[in-house]
Image 1 (cartoon, rainbow, N blue to C red):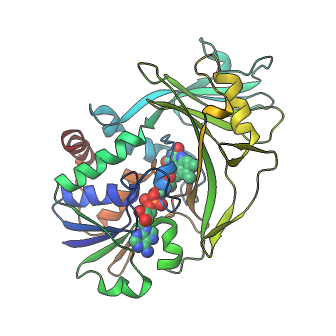
Image 2 (image 1 turned 45 degrees about the horizontal axis):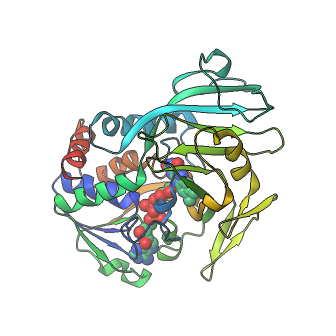
Image 3 (image 1 turned 135 degrees about the horizontal axis):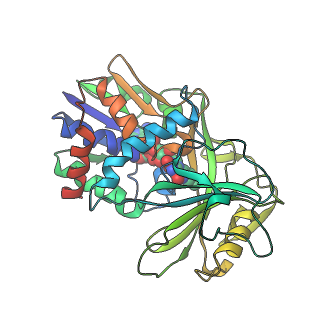
Length: 356
Ligand SMILES: Cc1cc2nc3c(=O)[nH]c(=O)nc-3n(C[C@H](O)[C@H](O)[C@H](O)COP(=O)(O)OP(=O)(O)OC[C@H]3O[C@@H](n4cnc5c(N)ncnc54)[C@H](O)[C@@H]3O)c2cc1C
């Protein structure tokens, strides 16, 4: 089947690879392509994903546990296949001043109090409660280019082009896959799309291997957490979720309540202070060493949209979970034009390892 994909982020790539693998003819049209056009293009959310395989800031009819299971199961083949930039590490969810009632359904989950090793903790503070689990983590600066190479090797064609709403009907003789993220607001008049701002801070890291842990840490003096993820060449930290929208090209929305300026960017101060405190044994963290940027999670108030209407298959609105849900969503989207046999994702993972 002839398929046109609008978008150049993680949904477009995963959907495009799956379609090509199953024998469809595809082309991908995007204003900008994630990472190929730099890693700081504000209209491409994929450039900013941390990216833990753990769904947050997403609306869906599925429960949180069901979403986690779908994300984890669909990423498992990519983790199991050598040479795909997906790994597993220990993740700590820690609270200085709160109790958690029940443990969530996470991989290898256990209470922090039952953990035998040290917990990442701020100087002079202690952990009241929390849990420790395993988590898949995607090394995005390697993974996204791997996906492009795979897509092209399988026969996909990518073109830089902005699609307008009036063009949509005439674009394809076959099926059009809409993976335009926040762009769906304008392209398909979807008023339930929001641009949820998130900051990413990175300091250089020169260890031989990435650190084997990450954390989501809620300090006692703040009502929200800060997170840390280890990349190969940087330590990445963030954890801001500011609601807003893009109006006439400008983002308008919430401002940090405790602001701090780092690298010319106004951030919620906890993103810096928590990680500077916890991680200073591993890496030299000073404001001068930080590279800061921010992007917008394509959050859809009406819920992530993966459905076919006529000759259009929508696959967008994944909020802060677009990487986590990418393979699961791609399967749902592609199933609307043909069968996706059991065992397809392991085959696709092998393709990524071979061509990427
Ligand atoms: C700070 C931050 C941290 C995050 N961390 C995580 C994480 O740890 N785990 C996780 O799973 N997710 C995370 N996310 C969310 C994730 O980045 C997004 O959900 C995901 O990247 C969305 O992918 P997408 O392909 O739908 O959209 P995008 O990556 O935004 O791609 C949309 C594409 O459509 C194109 N486009 C739009 N309109 C048009 C048009 N009219 N014509 C042509 N092209 C068009 C754009 O150019 C772009 O290529 C994070 C996001 C942010 C901002």
